[in-house]
Image (cartoon, rainbow, N blue to C red; front, side, top):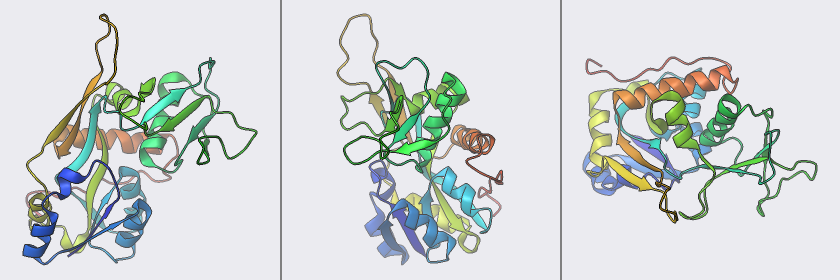
Length: 257
């Protein structure tokens, strides 16, 4: 089996035992860009990949693939994984900037701004390396990006906002496999690659003042009914806000497969 995974700061527990497990099981593992992971699975260059819900939805439209409910990365509550930084003078959000406008969590951030904060802008403008918009005509009222340090806390946290809105965690990475390897052996192999970490607790750093309680949350590393509920909510939001042209079927491995 050929497995590809993206470069991502939160995947370490999922791959902690990957070297030994891959050696024992005769599996190959490559780390690629997120875009290449999607392309490799779609083009049959890989059998399994860690993909975002947006990527799964795109390729499931033309490729027979299945989600393996083993390990995953899902965000519940405040995690500081992706923040929404608001302009000090903003009264109404009319323009949005981001380092990576095509990123799934970034797109969810823009959807949250429209759903919860009546943002008028639908286009996400790409920021240059110095943090300014590529176009001089655009001055973002909101910027969606990964906080540079744990102390660079945004006014809004994407996972916290999603959890409040959907009453479910936000899955950001799922194991997706081609139909040829959609069976329990693959499920067990992916579990064998992970360590025993099932969740990581996160607390807001650098908070001053007696009357303010730091925001908290959890990064989840195991599949659950709650994660599946969050996936369903996320995919429906993507479709409703036209980030997807087709509402995908969520094909998830079951015990009898």
